[in-house]
Length: 495
Figure (cartoon, rainbow, N blue to C red):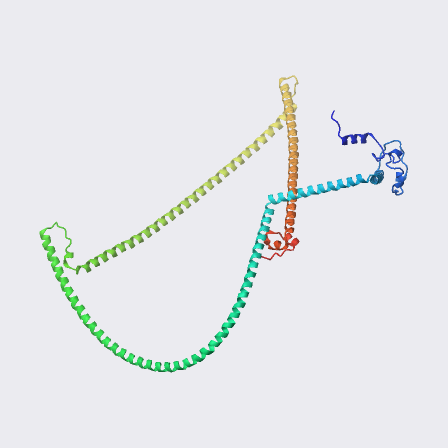
């Protein structure tokens, strides 16, 4: 047999023993040896008058208690425990001090353990929850932005101070320069005044001379222009005569060249009829170059015209092909619509045929039912008048069939009842499964709500642990409206 632990032994003793400290149904006036101190009852607080101030009989040891008896027992037992505790404290102060130290130590250890658990839970939340990671990232960004802003502000302040010193120094130098310039300006004004007067006199004289020279130059240029016009007209007339003479010479040379060409062609044709005629125009000098250029230009114009015609014909062919494709697509669409219409018509005809067949079957079934009903009525009427013999073969077969049918009906009913019970059981199982699913869903929702609450508290703790300037530097969209309200942040501030 396994040894029982101390708690089990105490529970067994409590079940087997009865006394003032074990059960409220036992009389409170026990023997003096059970009292922790002498005259203990004189130190207790008197109870209010009522049914609880009557003496309880010591026999029988157990009786049925009431709520009032239980309340009185708990009150008296608490007073007895307090008196015993005070007496123990007075008799053993060192042990009491040690006990207090142990309790304080246990409380500190418990508090430290709870703090460590809370810290580890916070660290785990910060590592696992994306919102807390994003918040920590935003806090780091805000700190970095603040440090950058401070460095920029300090640099700007230093630049402002340096710029102010430079401006002061520049102002002092500018004042000295302005004084020097004023002195120089006075001297320069005096010099410029004298120089202006001398210059005005020189300008007047120079203007007078320039006007005289301009008039003389204009008159000379006008004479030269008239002479040039006369000379140009004479040259134009001479050039026109030369051009006319040259044209006349060219025409005569062309006629001679044509005659010579024709004569040479005739001579060459007489000499060798099969010899190809080529290189004849090249031997008549530069006059034939114009004809060659005209021929080349004519050929280029013909080539360009052919290209234009080919482009126009290609565009027309493309248009024809597009029109043909459009017509083909239209024809295909028409064929598809016609096929769909025929298919729809065929489906409607099949549905109508099925409905007609179903109507015919229904009428046939109605006629069969009417005929069966008529024959049943006739057989019932005839069967009541037919004499029956229980010993006959037909009657025995009929009774066997009736019994067999009754047994089959009973089996069918039993099967139906079992199926109904099975359906009800399946319904209860489904209901239980749905209830368990709802419980699991609610538990998951509670866990999710608890996690959301922990995340929210951790966010507030992280935000409260940061200084005010860091909180104001965090971008507003990273915090919720409730956090803005609780922390009293400046939502419109930007870095």
